[in-house]
Image 1: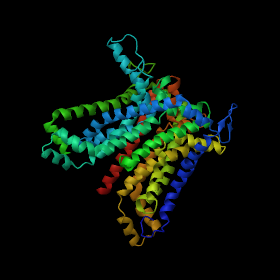
Image 2: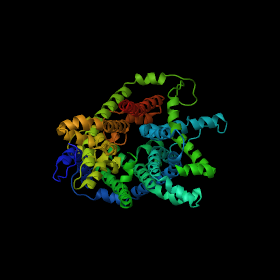
Image 3: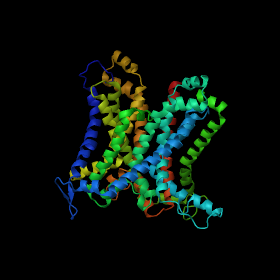
Image 4: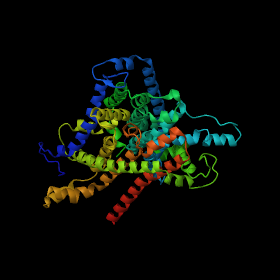
Length: 291
Length: 273
């Protein structure tokens, strides 16, 4: 059952793989093809789909500056979130990796904890902090700094804040994994050869941790750019991201063909980022973080 | 390790900066969640600041809210079924990937994690469209299949990572001592696999229990899971119950892996001793 024999015509791995491959074919590969087919259909005024090969959705999606602007806005939010996560996550990962504290395991556990806390709860928790009757307004009012509650929610900053809060653990974990894999003798050697601690960091530790930083950045960017929940919960009317357009088209307007075309745009754009990453670094780096 | 020690000794400012930054990061991560749990016990009738006293009233109201109870039942059932199906499929696939060499392995490895490479919204739309094409209305099975395909890559990654650490010697020994492959699987391989199976199931359950991105697309009208219920409550008005509901959810999803880890450690220590 479990031994890898030299026999190359061994069918056992294929038997073991068949349920997973069936699931992926039926639930991912074929449905994705359908999205492509659907994007060429047309939604009639009556609300039905007209089967055929129409370019109308594509002309609309590719020529209407509204869609382009939302896409660029989405990528901008994704990029800002990723940079913030990297800046906040690196010191934390460095501390956990190189700290001599006895409670290192506890720090790691704390780091993993947010993965287990629901995304929607972590997102909505910011309403308790920044809302009109939230913690910050309560403190400001108690101290007499403001007399009326300040509206701090429902703007671009809170969307980014919510996304950082959601994605930071992915960043820290990936950086930690690659810092942890660095041979301590390398930094020790750099130090004994006369480099300052900062030089040793810049010349040895930082370059060796780049794969983790890149993997974390990829995850943050792709997950951040693909979300529609955070903008709904923490954003204002102008803060909708590209996935919100898809959600609105499919769920609110029931315009399936348009939603399909928009889905393909998002898939291609974010897929290109993944492929670009995979071209230079391996996707295997990401799975290291989960092990 | 040595680097950290050296820095501690010779460049206190750098290390102090890192320490402060780390503390701030942890505060940033946990303060909002702590506030949710704190406000859940607030006696005030609006459930927001200021705290007027400790009370369990919001938990009592939760227990009497039929919609929330139903959402919990749906989430638990969905999570449990997802965990069982996804882990069964995932463990088989992982065994194939870790224990055998065959042509096209790299490609298949990518295929297995493909569902997380595709943005979840797109995965949600495609599955929904396929169902629509087949002429089926949204139903619980769609929700379940969606959760299975979405959790599968995570299970495969976690289980593969654990499987690599399990040596084949035991199975080879069992086989050479005359056990047949089935006996070997059930009496040697499976017990050794159990930690990986448990980790996969836990992971799948938690992801399913937390999922909202796909669930909002897939759920039939009238059916709510806990996350979509919270989402609906958020859109209507921020009711104080929401913090209590959040607290219950945090306790479930955090206590489960901690109990699992504790149990695993206890089993390991018992086996070791």
